[in-house]
Length: 131
Image: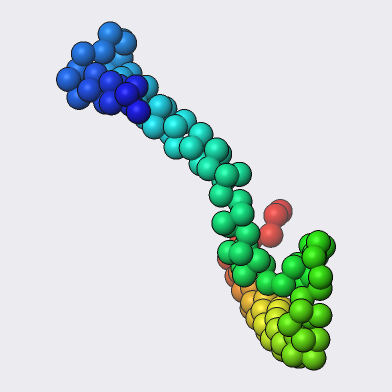
């Protein structure tokens, strides 16, 4: 932290001995970026246990995301019938969303193909054939 304060002071007071208009600013920015990256890289493994519930929530159930669970299966703990019904609802909603997205993609590709054909036809009409 002291090095950051020193580099910031050198830059603001224009006391740096480096040649170049913005050399001291570049050193300060490299220091800030490197420090931020380093703190992030160190804190991520240290906080992995705190991030695990968030990742589980984002990815859904561990078995659905392809990860193996170490402890007892969730459907045994929570009650198999309720869990299976919730999973099938999630899967059917997901499948419906994927199907809708694929249909929209196909429709967009068809419209794009029509536009390309129209453009090609227009170019062929205005361009005289080679002699």
